[in-house]
Image (cartoon, rainbow, N blue to C red; front, side, top):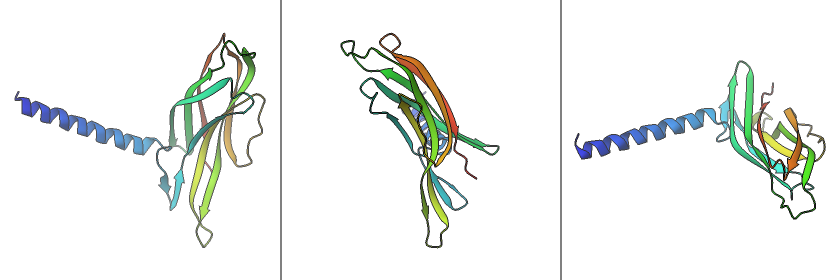
Length: 168
């Protein structure tokens, strides 16, 4: 095969794969863009946080996020790791019963001059707390896990959580 033809073939294949990947992200990654249904634009922002009282000891990292819609069920999933970041010289060596909570909520709505809803933000939030938290009133769905121990002896906890984002 001619070297120029081979280079053309590889570049063409790379371009096609990039286009397919972009279409996949735009279609199946609701947090990357806003979806537009029936005149209402919907965005799906993602956030993560750690309560200030335990922030010096742990970190929450989201390594994967996505969502799907079908059969009347719109869901968002988050996966990642809760990691112990405190050193062995610190007085606190571990934490027990850390609450890891994922919740979805209506974070923002925008209305036009006639009062019709034109856009909304359905946030997916992941937060770590030292105690069972009180969730916002605009919560759509939530799931929580209690991490029994996180510390020097057990420095990581892997999670894979999902919540509904559907509002009627």
